[in-house]
Image (cartoon, rainbow, N blue to C red; front, side):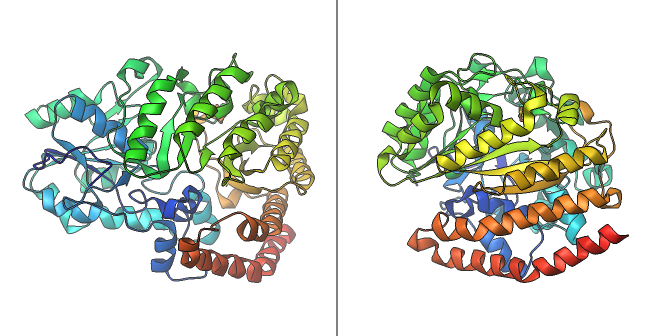
Length: 511
Ligand code: SF4
């Protein structure tokens, strides 16, 4: 099978996760977000199929695509000489005789991260990612691995969640949890596991232990939907974010191109450029620079026949790039120059519409503009994206420590100003992370009148735009017709129940 390293068989290190992670979401990254919620308006099996269908695998159970983070770990271990492979969760049993270490990575093991935790609180039912992970950990293959004394190592962006689950840590026989970028430590940890040496229970990788560019390997098999990393870290320093604690590293263009070729070899014809802020690739501090971005996009466009997507951009960078260099329009010209790509989707963070709160929790988010101008920066960036067919899925954070009613009122005002711009706006409850990790979680019991109004405004905004997005832009490929039907079913269900949701929020407003 193309796209994965040559089969060695007899894997001593097996890397995997549950179905919500080992899936390419029908080639549409955004559908993966459905796995962060409970099934709504349809049976759970159908919801799971829409969010996380099974992957094509080879005879050993190696998926043709796998999450990028798992691919990095696999590459590091193969380079160090281990017999390691990513295996689909349905095929673990085939490797129980040779497996000595089982490594499991996840974005959201227990659905404690946003937006899973918020879905869970609002709907009152467990999100499917949590259910899927629990079923996986209690599957016969993982039970057998535990019984045989195979070392189980957890990692990935959600590693911190194990600190909230000491009971399951013990019950599921987890030997070690690695929290942070693991490339520098992973070889030693696996060596110790294989030798039966003592392993620390929790390994936290701080900013000084993060891998250098030289220590970051090229992936050996295709990544989900062609995701490749162009940069690590973020210079903006938002207090609620863990990424910002890591140093900034630009991945060299040659490295990026090598990874794209690995994906192309596996017949993945699209690419997602991953960074916390794609527009800061090769930037001068927080000011985007035209040359490196144009070069990156031109080189990628030459290689990739399908779509180019961006993982995240910052709104201040969108405004600065377009106002100073017309750069957003130039990049979109390059992206759409293949003749078939018409738009691009991206995640952006608004977080608050209050300059007062922005100044406290994310003073550099608006840079190079002052935080006092934050709402204008957001609206300008939304207008630029609308004009250039960039469709943002934007996040807001509710319940940030130090938030006051007047801050929420400002956010409501901003959401109303954003109505004319094609977008989705997703409110999320504050989860203690980054410099605010010692603060309290925001729960639905802390909802104020203004929060309810804000939730309602976001719902109205999304309902206003979602049909347009599905009808004109999303899931147009003929082979995705059944998926499209499922999504239309969901949108109809939500529209039918908007009035119920409105009544629910209004009743909360009256309390
Ligand atoms: S801009 Fe985004 S990635 Fe950067 S620190 Fe703020 S929240 Fe984190």
